[in-house]
Amino acid sequence: MRYLAENKKIIMVGIPGVGKTTLLSNIEEVIKNHQKTVSVISFGTLMFDVAKENGLSDRDGLRKLPVSEQQNLQKIAAEKIASKNSDVVIIDTHAFISSPEGYYPGLPEHVLKIISPTNFVSVSAKPEEIYNRRMKDDTRNRDKITLANIKKELDVQSGMISACAVLTGAPVKHVMNGEGKIDEAADKIIKAIGL
Ligand code: ATP
Ligand code: MG
Image (spheres, rainbow, N blue to C red):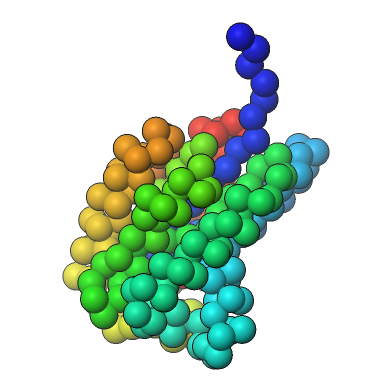
């Protein structure tokens, strides 16, 4: 049996404001310096691009669509991701979405089967830090923010990502993105996955 270097398909999850996009731009630079090809994909942006063609105008309106419509958009986005063949593909997404019908999975089994990830990264931070980061970011149309809600969301995230690991057999790296410590968190992820 021969072991070939495989392409990595990494799914990064974290609740809004935890710092996924900031971390990923840091990681992307490091990987490029290692002479590897890398694609960083925002799952929500892919879904929104398709939804826009069907008349949706507000990105934050995505999570208010009926779950059945969101499921269809997820499937289309997953198929686009599966067709990428960079050395490293990293997907910026959420383990769950707060919809009017309750928490619903960002990565249901049908989506995981299409993407077939090699690794998961679950990003956390202190609830107070997440609260402050959300309050500072006025480019987003966020739902009502409370500390109690953020704590609940961190709990739900941890359950959802464990389920993803069991469904796919891919490992989960849990990383804290501490205040002012982006480089440290990025470094931990790169070392853990061997990027
Ligand atoms: P969303 O799910 O809404 O896209 P996100 O997880 O991608 O959120 P970011 O947009 O990356 O979060 O970060 C939210 C805010 O927090 C930004 O203003 C960013 O600059 C800041 N931030 C992220 N990480 C840190 C950190 N380690 N220290 C201080 N500020 C941070
Ligand atoms: Mg983001």
